[in-house]
Image (cartoon, rainbow, N blue to C red; front, side, top):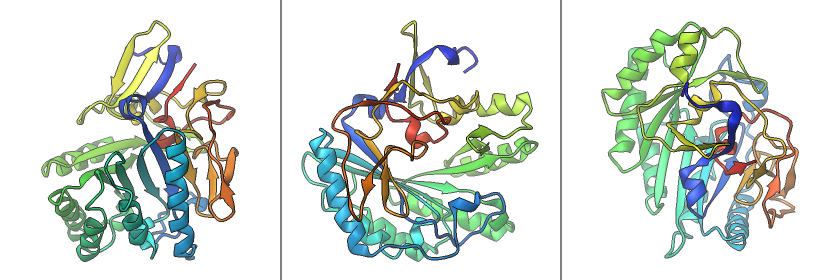
Length: 322
């Protein structure tokens, strides 16, 4: 990572989204969460149930599939985030609806961010509701405030083993706070005992990296290579680079991509808990409509007009270039 000229990079994406006609729908289904972590942003969670009627979600799925199809994307990755999505009473029905589009020539993939707090019995329902997806993955968020005793820690890891044994790819995400590198390394090794990858992330506050990291911590965040490379970078001299995850890239500093061509809005959308459809998570000002009233994707690739630092991996993985 140290040999990559960050300021000279002129193209960013993942190999998947660069070389494959696949669209991405990031869906923040609700902000309701059964946890209330002290470090979580106030706007990111609520203890009030903010769910929409099930029909609203199901009709939106159909419209999303057809609009992406019109843009030339038959395959779709559905990324779920919250809040805690698994407590939305319509979630499993939505997954079953999406599975109905898993036909010849059209592949559906799903990627869920979850605190994994449901019992194993519920996760069996999730396994059943995703059996026809082409690819499925769980990104389990490690929230130490709710995982204090050994039983809860073992239960968390055992549920990941349960899912892994049933054909679901699993990964753990944890945020590194300054001064806690040794603890995070030990935790990472503990998950590796069960062949489970743990990605350690830099802490971001208001689209900036939290102050207080020492160089050893930045170096570690920039060089995690315990799973395959899939991030693609190209510099102005046409030299290409590959990284294991966007955390390696963001640890070097967050930046905006104003003026770059970006396929967000055409190949990718973000849906928010109130139904707003936007170009991306960070570029939330570029509204494409609302799932309750109607929305329209871009019919061509457009320039980025967002001055904010691009700090969301779901936004970064969509192809963008100078």
